[in-house]
Image 1 (cartoon, helix red, strand yellow):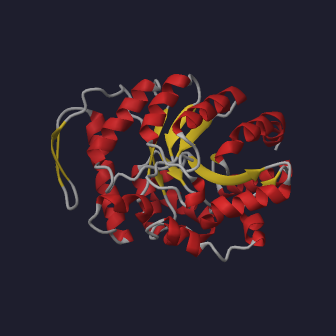
Image 2 (spheres, rainbow, N blue to C red):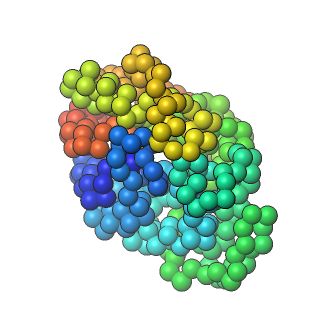
Length: 313
């Protein structure tokens, strides 16, 4: 999470993850942290370029980039093509309809959700057209592109994933994405994705974890940095700033935290949470350790205990 870690540390962490045997690494693409206590938000694309050069095997992915407001989709197409070249094809472009928190900075107001999905639909078409090569002109409802061309692009376009949480986004992901992205182990999301054309494609989930040998420390860290997670994406997409997220999560209890986030050093708790994604039809899970200064300890625990247990399960 770029919201909780500086740029050099993020590159160090992905190097450690590769050495520890992780299959893929994802990075958020934010302008703001969720809450002030997180304290960071470097530019994800600079970090990806550095990570591509600092690693050789691990897959890289945005989780996710919003191509509808802060970035024009033609610029996202160029960035993604460049990272795909730098990483020798190890890059997947994860896209989503974004959050007000990060996209409001360019002004103009925050569109309603149905308009955001229309914009995302057009953005995907622009990105894919530019990856295909040649000059692209596009005159859509929300975007215009005038004689754009990517001069450096990989022979094989990057994979493209779309984040989904409801009917509109599931339909868009199933129709136009190479993989599904979701943050909850919902069989309904997978089913809608499949029905819209996604059957047989990868489905990538996200599981927050607060690892610490002291469970109470882990719970309090999750409460301080991740209480906002319980609001759900219908709420999270609309709130305008860190103060709003802190206010919205002020009534979250410790019991609410432990019900949704594995806290402590229980391998079984994490294995059970991962199993929920597998049972819902997901093929990949991104483990998101809470706390930027705890990544090294988490990765060592993964290598020593968690990875063997998950492999056995």
